Amino acid sequence: MAADGLTTKKSSYGPREAIERLEAELSARGMTVFARIDHAAAAVAAGLSLRPTALLIFGSAKAGTPLMQSAQTIGIDLPLKILVWQDAAGSTWTSYNDPAWLAKRHALGPEVLAAVSAMAAALDAITRAATGCRPLQRR
Image 1 (cartoon, one colour):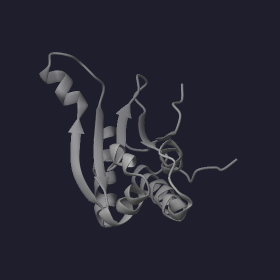
Image 2 (cartoon, helix red, strand yellow):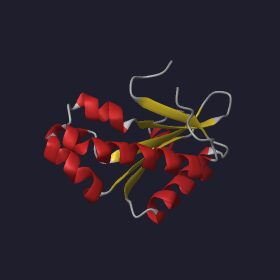
Image 3 (cartoon, helix red, strand yellow):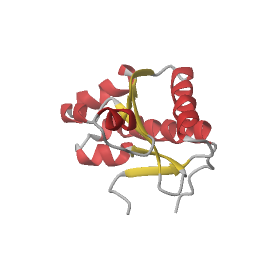
Image 4 (cartoon, rainbow, N blue to C red):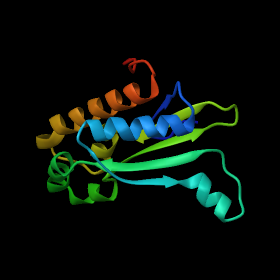
């Protein structure tokens, strides 16, 4: 089942290595990693079980501020996030919100469409580099 506006890619690496590679790739591209949330560890602390699931929250004021200047409500979806998770079969995946979907959701103006496209391209490149997946096939 695919969610609206969600981009999901299979990783060639396990969950721990995938999240570490993503964090390194984000930092190498000058983005700030604000937090790493380990949902699986929180589940264990609550006496529950959850397959490996972790969230990176990251961004760049230089990239995000123009979007918020266009529509401040996008601040609910910024900074950006990438979820790394393992399915029941043991495969590792990354998921993130498509910036074009976020732009539509918040009715961003045409003045930021180039920035939204650049953000989408950057997320694609970051996740490809960090997970070893092939480029997205556009249809």
